[in-house]
Length: 268
Ligand SMILES: *Cc1c(COP(=O)(O)O)cnc(C)c1O
Image: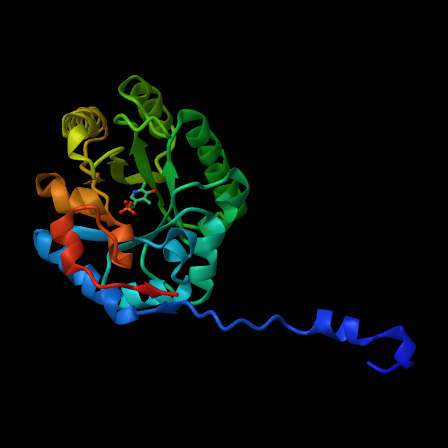
């Protein structure tokens, strides 16, 4: 940048210069692997692990973390939005990926990139089934089954099917035999807090009951998963076929005994 002194172009160059910071966020990948293995010690050998890598793996990185977890044989990954899953697929991640907030506008990308939606309401499921039909009409040679995960509301009251919504879900499912339920799951509201253990147990009972209603009707038994990190360390009896490990991977667990076993992941 060149000009007469009076124009004070140094003000422009200052603005154009990349802001340089001395602050560095260091992510210790070995600590993530260590933490994964600490939780695995609490699991039965057959219990599968879905690793939560939503929101840039709680701020730790996207592809780097997913790739590490894939290498260490986690069974599933979960992201919040479809675009996070698309990015992982484009970078070469091949493990199954659950998308927790699948938006209607993203269904087609999810078909193309083999991303599996959380289905949490009948309205959303109808929209999904419509898109499946359109996609199959446009791609007549596709032989894929469309895998979905059914979210049950067992008391968190955020998203999910309640017992009384299940007949509508089953009816919609009957209309479309290209869609397969691979799992039924629910989320605990207070698995970290012993004050609420009675509530947590009630959530489990509601989950069990909704699951039976579903399996009685569909004639096969999808996987079940209920536990988040705190749930894994506090409610080992509710592991079912899979658990959803989130914040514990990144070094944080509300249970004091578990916290002692975890290694610190992020250092600023
Ligand atoms: C984030 C999330 C988890 C993981 O919870 P942590 O407490 O971080 O282990 C599990 N299930 C669902 C549905 C989530 O959104």
